[in-house]
Amino acid sequence: MKANLEHDIGTLAAIVRRAAQPLQGRIDDFEVVLSRARFAQLVLIGEASHGTHDFYRVRCELTKQLIREGRVSAVVVEADWPDTWPVHRYVTGRADAAETAADALGAFRRFPQWMWRNADVLDFVGWLRAHNEGLPPSQRVGFLGMDLYGLHASIDAVVRYLDSVDPEAAERARARYRCFDAGGVDPQRYGRLASLGLTPSCERAVVEQLRELQEHAGALLRRDGLIAAEDRFFVEQNARLIRNAEHYYRVMFGHPAASWNVRDRHMVDMVLALQQFLRSERRSGALVLWAHNSHLGDARATEMHELGELNVGQLVRERFGPAATLVGFTSFDGTVTAATSWDGPAQCMQVRPALPQSYEALFHAVVADMPSHNALFDLTVTDDAVRALSAPRLERAIGVIYRPETERHSHYFASRLPAQFDFVAHLDHTRAVEPLERYGTWSPLELPETYPSTL
Image (cartoon, rainbow, N blue to C red):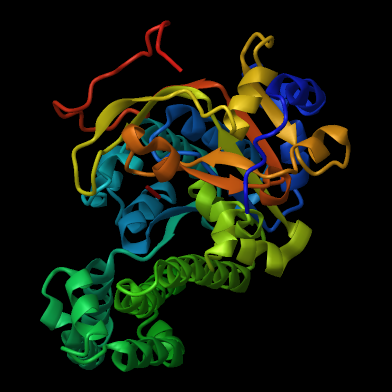
């Protein structure tokens, strides 16, 4: 896919402006999004970076409104299942919950901590706890993860659970998971050794463990009536994560598309299992998914597809069609919380103005005369404005790493936005999300007025 760089941006902006709805900071501004989301089974709300306050804030407000209306069963985020479990226990008011929202977020200790340990998520978790307190347990909205990096945390969770209900089963689990010992605490080392044939693959062991948990679920639930269905499902999801993470780490040293596809298929696998579990508990509300645009926008509309990559948005659309709503975000400039390298410290960094050939630059021209400089684009309609957006253009993606010195190569890809999302909110000038822990490398920044023109 090659981005279209030929049209004059002023002429194109005049056409696209017809599709732009100014955003004035009210939830009513998003009524067209909410109207569609109210009838969806899955509502996917993205972000153009992992460190932008404005994306988090709007995403939280959209989710809150759907929750207030009783449309949501759970919020599912781009985080590991065991890391979100303390948050889930807290927001649903379980007896074994942490005392505060900050404590509930304490499991997010690995890089990038700021992605979930930040002021916006803290406020949302506190709000969700307060909302749930007035509801019966069957109507409380959960907060759960769908990612797969936490291999060893999930192993610990499975073994601890089985120790409490079936010590013999716990010993079988320990024996199966012992095959990861060759990699020590680093699952990437296991993956490297297994891919080179220097250590046996754990594939059969992790599949056997998941199968055993599924086959004996009923027996575990009947033992003294002490084990809740939710706890049993929690451990099954951990075993599912272990199975998929083993595959992910084993293929990550081959073609990049292979590991990306394993990861996104895993996210959908976790979401579908959660949806099935909630339905078994007679809960039919939608799931709201929070993740990066690159995961939640349909990959078939981007150059990812040409690289052999699929994603959550594509898989969800293929399965659910119009019963899924996809919402993305863009911005022109501002600040972002990110690192310059993996495992590096969080920094508040200036985001360069978007490249002239990008959707972000086009939308910047569209909103120039709007008081808020923010707009919502409904891409579900068929008109001249949306058709004008359908030619491929560059789209920016900032993950947990931002490298402005290699901006074009590191942070842009070609896409066809109307085929990628149902709606896009453009927030022209955005600011960095505030980490709960402010180290010396993070301090608030504002772009000077004269500022010149990984996921």
